[in-house]
Amino acid sequence: MEIFDQSGVIPFRKYKGKIEILLVTTRKGNWTIPKGIIEDNHTPQESALKESVEEAGVWGIVSDNIVGTYKYKKWGGTCSVKVYTMDVTKVFKKWEEDHFRERLWVPLDKAVEMIKKKKLNKIILKTFTNKTLSKKKKHNDK
Image: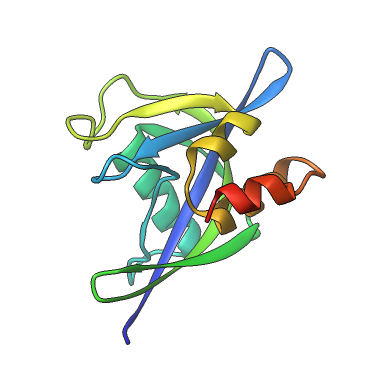
């Protein structure tokens, strides 16, 4: 089975003293973070920043360190995603994929409810809080 190396960012901002995450819709309408294939001539962070501009219309400061990794099935193989945080410094009114992607700023707890990928939720919670998913949330996520 083929492995596709990807990178993505968790775009965040502080709003009224609390962290908010920017989510985008997938082509199937699910909520996720901006991510994509790591291009040969880019570092994982550069590729993730490029994807955030294309998919979410945001620019910012990408962390140097990976905050987590997760995998999912796509294209008949497995995508392996390196995740970074990105402190958003610019939000564009129009962006490349705005004709088929929605974006939405949400509080951390709402982001975890909206994202279906359990591993990504764990990465978000671990990165921005000391919380972990409750047993109830894990059970409901199956």
